Image 1 (cartoon, helix red, strand yellow):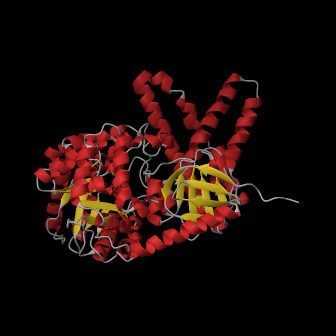
Image 2 (cartoon, rainbow, N blue to C red; image 1 turned 30 degrees about the horizontal axis):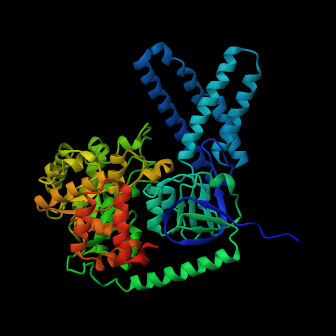
Image 3 (cartoon, rainbow, N blue to C red; image 1 turned 45 degrees about the vertical axis):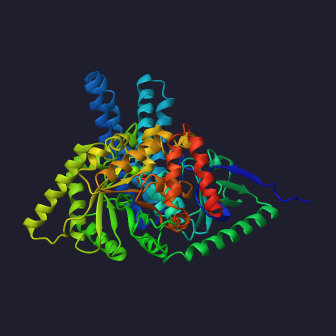
Length: 586
Ligand code: PEP
Ligand code: MG
């Protein structure tokens, strides 16, 4: 008699709340591990275009590398890359790939790798050191071309027809943005943390998720029955009857809480002693506006506009952006729509831009730094925002500000755009509030200087914590060090809120910390005026605000500022939250 398979549990990081139960689909594509998938004959020309663009991209990368090496150690050593260039220009090889593409009708990276591998095999068999070297060159270039092709490939998991729980090593934020919510019941990743953009996106889309599982793609196979618990960061393979019963009960309890929270939709987020805290929602895609409205948020506190640029072969034009901003602003009016100017870079890269290959992307050419050096891209966005601001209640903020010069330069370019539009006779809205995101420790420390130049602060705790504690926010290995309750983080937040008050500007928090009810008392006590979180979390935060008094929050904050460890701070926050709204913490 065959017994039921034994239940097995995998622990990860709880990334997006919710429970999913279904069959796994394991997408375990390592960088160089290729799957073959069929294409129809109508798409051969698309594959050829992808191939040509990957060859050009590879050529550019080799030339850049050659130049860097020539500058560093001399032209002679850089000459070794001439052989690599010959490979991407080898017409015999290219022709053979194109021929086989027509006959085999499958993805071009697969065909290219097969053809190249055959060349490598034949050359390595010949007893000639020169030719063996050439085999290595071909291998090296093949890997590069395939990687470039994969960066542009349609992702096969997006085509899975059956509802499933997607298990992947890692996904880009744009992979997640394009997921079909009907098909992807839950998401489990080997990599990632609570504040990676992939996770943020999954939360916005309401896809229950567990990340940081380390090796789920190695131990699971497609078609297994699994339960995903996004509340506690658990994957349960072959859940037994008792487990399923427990989870049905958990779902029932969560459903009841959701219903109670739903009833708060029309109420104000005001503390018991009468302080109103503005509660807004973060969005990545314009479609999320429905959810913002249905969850009763007071507008959009952070619109991550870079998602317009991800998954695009060409960058959106000024006109396209204008239409989208105008439409979103209309829908949230009279409440504010805070548009964050482009924050490309870090873990968000666009297909429409030259790939930016950096050793430390989060410390690199990101956000305002990128925009200030790509004025055509930046100005197109600013002009679109200025034009859209004729309707609704638009505000704007700059991401990743590290000091006053960047703020001043950003404001100067806004002014230039205003003058250009005026000269061209194009309609634009009146002056509106322009803020700085505070996400770099230098900006927090110099908040008193920045506060004189902007109309508001919005603290991006995801980055502020990443940069001040020096942990990569996407790296599951250091996720445990990501501590919003770190005494230094609390001090930085206090400096920003105080500088805002002293200069009569408002301060918000739009990082994930704003949606964690555990920290609501602390943030209120610090004097934060606005909290902006994923739309689905807004009712929870509202409920927390309504059950607190400013007096107890201020007292908590004063006490916490005397404590010396993250765990002591956390303990105090938990104690107050537990005493006021225990059910919201489960
Ligand atoms: C943040 O850093 O907290 C933030 C809100 O911006 P993002 O998560 O998009 O970097
Ligand atoms: Mg940020």
